[in-house]
Amino acid sequence: LGAGVVRAAVAATAVLIAAFVVTVAPSRWLEVHCDALSLNLPVLAACGSAGLWAALAVGARPAVRFAIAGASVAIGVGLFAALEPACLAGPFGQVGPALRPVWLDNVMESKSALWLAARYPAATLAFIAFVVAGAAEQVTAWRARPDARTGLAAAFAVLAALLGCWQIKLMPYASWLAVVPLAVFASSLHARAWISAPVMRLAAVLLLSQATLEVGLSALLWPFPRSATTQAADQLTDPQAPCFRSANVRRLAELPPGLIAADVELGPYIVALSPHRVVAAPYHRLERSILANRAILNGPAADALRQLQALGVNYVALCANGATNSARPPLSGQSGLRAQLLGGARVDFLREVPWGTDSPIRVWRIAPAQ
Image 1 (cartoon, rainbow, N blue to C red):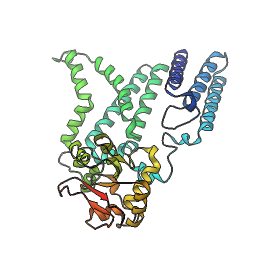
Image 2 (image 1 turned 90 degrees about the vertical axis):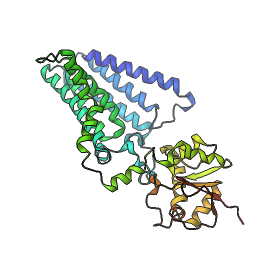
Image 3 (image 1 turned 45 degrees about the vertical axis):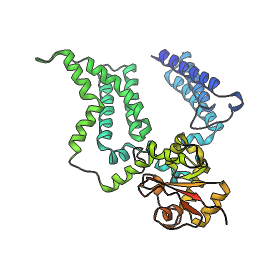
């Protein structure tokens, strides 16, 4: 097993290094980004692989081998931190503290399964049941054949299930690892009474599917409606909300091209479906843009005018149906520009485009300076 693990680690490291060399220009090799393939990752992987190889190559006691492997990992982590200390905090380690409370902390993929369960209980419980069943089956296989291979597989399955519940973005990886032991379990089923083995196996595959589990749990939970607070929270990032529908966003193309200060979540739709540019979009590397956009929409109108003029903004576009998490409390109580505009207050330096009250997107032109 040890030789196999070393070969796998060396192969993975070689692929990582090759991908880095091929996809990153030499002039940017020393630029480290925590959310992308950068030099710190191949260095860490190389140290770990070298340590595993050295630990197995020496004919020493297990304690010595563990010491060699541990020392190599410590060196790798030290070099990883030296190249960019912020990356020790994870992929978003380089994001400034000012952006976290106003946007990053509300990004769905960074939430836990508990957060998701409050909004989509059936889908979340189906996922949890699936990965727990996969981990349990892998642990059962290890107990039936307690060797290093099954033990390592069981450890990976359990760790993946825990990480999948920790952050939503890790759920697909946990599901993929759970598929293997469940597939092995289904293939091992035999005939029972009048049910043939193929039928038993097909039934197991169908019953253990996340889709089947979700349908069943949805039926069980249907009599228990979600709270109004949870339903309102769903609208904040619902991509099917009227504000985000392509036909509604394309109406912006009727206006002369310009720069738009819009709800952050609306930004990518505007760029993709119209000739306009936007001040900000929901990407963590656009920290300064997101903060500037928030200051415009949620700050006092007088301050907003100065920033709009400084950036050369031509329009302000807002979701009128509340389908945006930019509807958080503004910077100055309820007197922010966004709250004023959607509340019907008149702002001297803005003129609304007369699209009618039924439009899910309301647009204002920046009035020329007098």
